[in-house]
Amino acid sequence: MGSQGSGGVPLVQAPYTVLLLPLGTSRQDPGAQSFFLWLRRMQALEREQDALWQGLELLQHGQAWFEDHLREAQRQQLHLGALGENFLTDLHSEPGRPPLAQIQKVNICLQNLIHEKELSRQQKGVTQPKEEMAQRGCTKGPRGPTRV
Image (cartoon, rainbow, N blue to C red; front, side, top):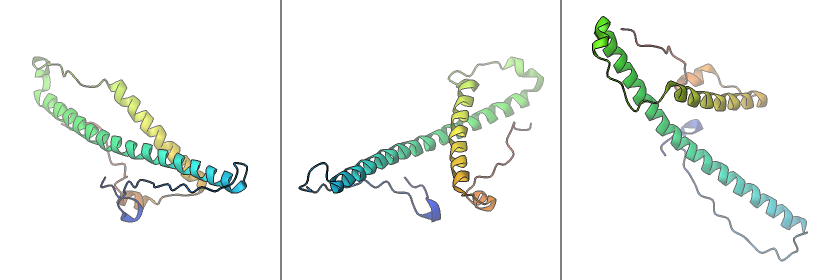
């Protein structure tokens, strides 16, 4: 997908190959049970990875969508600012724009997911220095309306 993992290593989606070997023992054999539990855990991890890859792809599409709509909203704000008090002469509606409530709902879902991850890291004692976050582009710069 072209994304970079930790340490600059590219993330690559690699399928699993599972080889089943007959054990020649009963299902009550501890070795067979252990193997079965291991195999079940591997399958669960594979499903989790599939869901994470799908989520990453959706986030990439979502980021492009947000950037496009942000640019359009800024363009409209600049246009409206240029009209000044004559804005009433240019009251064409913008069909197809998502309601603000839907955008805020998506933002809350993403924020909750990120907050959950941060709590998990804090519980494990893992913290990320601010310098490292800044290098990755995670800084929170000034956001808000475009000044006209």
